[in-house]
Image 1 (cartoon, one colour):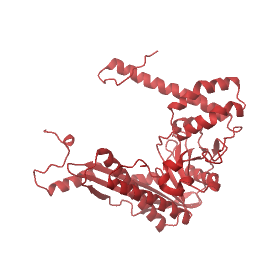
Image 2: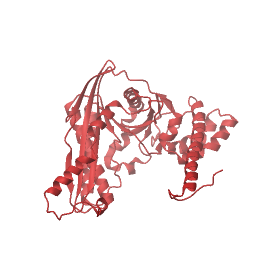
Image 3: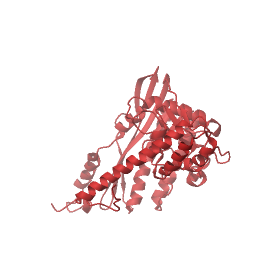
Length: 391
């Protein structure tokens, strides 16, 4: 038995470092075993388990724990994916931001990709922004993230206006991620612009009958885990036919959820071609999503596992309450079809292409910095001290 080593371990402390690495690996294996045991019980009773629905808050909107996704035939579909790339370079006296966003538009006929189009083109020029006002590192990070999201939303809006499409996929969430927006006037104004861009996109998608989906690749959320702990596991033995052994296993292993994110646990619960139940984006949307107005009541999410050797994806969507399950079924079927080409990569192909086209190389912002330096006095130093040394 390895004793727990608390605190940081120096890489030069080879003996204790080895113990620490083994300890980490053993904990991962132990937690995985507990999650598998818990998932096995839930899978066994999934057909007899009826999830409780809170009619007032509609936190959980479906009674089934797990639903088969189906496979969209892609018989005559136009699907767009939007992604962006960003580089930031803090300098002495100013900061540089380079951002690029692209919409890829895939046209499918009879299950095959017939045409791929790009907006504004396959390799668009990036946009350069210079920040001269003093911002601390957190404010600057917020600004970089908001500029990237704004550019992506602009590209998404343009794509909808230029093409007749069925579905629009965003790389990431479909709600603003900067609810604790910063205090500087510039970031406040940018956040307001970001909120307006999201709500305008919602309105445009509804008007043009376009399904808007947010594909969150690496979700860190524990929202669904929280629902399991509060609403499902406490009454599981009372509403299902669990054996004494299963009840004991449930009690022994349920604590592992305290150390679990949604995707980590659902990787054991879901089989390829299955999705979780739909849940509201937040349990208190009036607080978390208050800035998007009445749209906060229409933002929902689920997780879907599309391939055997990759984790589930979190899918967010906009839907009226009476159509939530219908929308989730259509969305999961489409994501399954777009993501089933490689057993170890669950990402929709249209977003893989958008990511490849939008990505920026570090050299691009370095060339801009060099070009600015060439126009200054020889004694002018732009690089931060940590970026330069005496030799």
